[in-house]
Length: 364
Image (cartoon, rainbow, N blue to C red; front, side, top):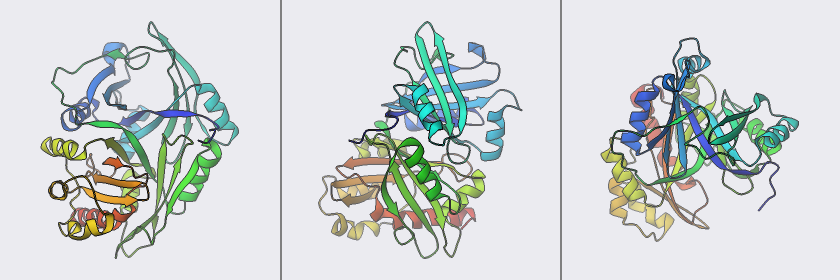
C-alpha cells in the first residue's frame, strides 16, 4: 500500500444541488431505498438552504436546495440543472489535508472551519476540482451526532426498503476537450493519487462516437475517479452531450456497489428506476468472452445486466438512464466478483445503448 500524502479514509458524502430537495429526497427513498437520517432547513434555523441527508450502507447523499432565489445554490441549479456539487472525502485531519493540497497547487474553495454542537465537532475545508465541483475534507472523529452540527436527526414517515447498496465504488468526471490529462495530473500532484488505467478512443468507440478516459486512485484504493474527455467521432458523443447540457465539466456518474446485483436491480426496476437497454444478442457470445460465472445467465439477460472479466475475476454492471430531466448524471450498479477493472469489454455495447438514447433525444 502506498503512503498517501493526504490519507483518505473513503468518501464521506456526495452533495447534489437540486431544484426541490424535498421531492428529490422522496425519489431517492422510494426508488433507491435510501433512508432519511438528518435534515437542515427553516426548522433548524437555516433561512437560506434546505438539505436532506440520506444513507444506505456506507453511502451518504445530501440533497440541497436554495430557499431564496439569488443564492449560489439556486444559481448552480439554474445553470447546471440538478447535479453533484461536492465529492466530500473523509479524512483524519482536515486542516492538514487542505494545507498539503494548497501547497501542491490546489485552489481553495473555503478555509478550514470547525462546526460544533452538543454531539461534538466536525472540521471541514474545501478545494476546487474540475468544473464547479468541490472536494470537501471532512474530519468527524470527534462527532457522534446524526450527520454534523447544524442538522437535526430526522426519519421518514414512510417504510423504506433498502435495495442492497453498500458503498461508492467510484465517481466519474466528464471534462472538456483536451482537459483529461490536466485533471489526471492534478489528482497525481495535488492529492498524490496513482494512475490506475488508461482507455483511449480505440478502447471506447463505436461507429459514431468516442471518448478517452483515465482512472486515478488514492493509495488504499478507497477513492477512485475515472476522468473522461470527448474524442473525435462522426457524431456528438455522450460526453459532449453532457457538457452541453451541464454547461461544463462535472460528475457524470456514481458507481454504487452491491453484493447481489440480481436482487438489487430487480428491486430497483420494481421501484421504477429506468436502465439503459442492451440488446439480447449481447448475451449470445458473452460467456465465450468472460468464461464461467456463478450467476444464471438467463437472470442476467432478463435484467439486462452486463458481464466482464479481468485477470482478478469478473464483474457485473448496469447503468441507469439519467436521474433528472437533463441528460447528465446517472448511476452504475456494480457487483465485483474479484475483478478490479471497470468493464472495458462492455464499453462498445454500453456506448451503443447510450447512442440509442441520444438518438431519441435528438442529440446524437
